[in-house]
Length: 118
Length: 485
Image (cartoon, rainbow over all chains, first blue to last red; front, side, top):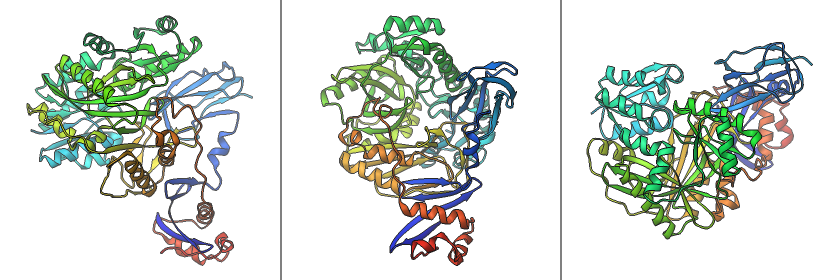
């Protein structure tokens, strides 16, 4: 991580720069943002066959039952992060094919928690 | 005297600093994942007491006090701070609990009984509040009172275990979720229902009692909230006049004296658009936003808590000075649904100014895990008037740098720059009733991002020199470019 001074068209700016496995963080007055070249997680989150963790958190309750039919919008997993609860719902109607987490698990951002049949 | 701080994060650090100043030996406790966290480095001794939720376990905390020879326990806020059985357990173990007596905590810290006490001293309360034992109970109560209603935890504050319910169909799931949150946050899943008042200002009075007498240390307005979590707090309130101010302080002091309150506490009120005020609840502990009051009064509330708990006198009622504002820096992504954020703090720089105070529990290199409260730091400023304070806070927020996880830094700036804040038209619904947009990204940031994504930046700053040598860098198309100064 470092401070970098850049000049564009005669104007000088200072930005803070750091890198982690997700990409490059840039900080400028009042804000910081992550720039990720391939945005793997974002692409994965768009896939409709699975319910993924939208943030790192702890699984507090699993409502999805293996082999049962889930209706679109049904709550499948309840995740807790920073003491707030997040209800992860079925993106479409389908059979619960796989449940890949257990109550109490700490799961990573983007982790597949439940797989639904198309 | 030797004080064990039964908490973590910024508040544990803040309390430990005062203990150091007072030359009182201190003990920190931590969970396994908090080992090495900043608060553990500020104490004379540290005891690891168990898993994620060990901060809630009586035996673990009291056991640590016993093994280190601590004589008193400061609970901070959250965790065991409003738990009367814990205060009793401390007494049984021969430890001084730095907070009100179990009797006062039961009377005021419990929302059901505090409401009754408030009614007894003649304070007006929110209509329709009642205890509910299950979802059906809650539905019946809601139908009686009329929607919208608020479901809230009987055993604690801070917005945990709280749900706004607008119709019958939402009540069963809201009840279950609120009860579960309350259980985790306060080890107590009792809920109650009350009428939801809108628009309203949230104004609270800081009190300090010695078991007999109490003093009011002014009010704080904390209307700017999201999901019942306060975001920005200030004192004095821009929305009440001296008549309401006096009425609130009188109610607060009478309530504290009726409960023989000892130590620091906060009496919360809602103030309606007509100036009518309603007693809301009492937080029988130090609050997150207590520095706002410290700025205006010059009183160190933690020091006062420790002194009062050991039989010392109440501080002399202060002369209030100027205006103070606090902003809470949270680990969350404000431009992506406020999703909780976690990650390693890669770079951290705080500004330093004469009227700026920063209370924090993080440092560079630390992992912020999604297990506890999202509060990373509080930036608190003082100014001779509200506008000066606002500008000082804005300047501090623009200067600070935190890389490695998302924070609400830019959202705090948007809030402070908004017309609602500038005009003081702040209500509990102000934040959630409008759409907030991310500020536009300057061109040079996008250019810098494109550049550093291609060249890479290593932690040793080699990236800078290699970037400068890279003839094919997109920077070349942007004109003159220098780095690594």
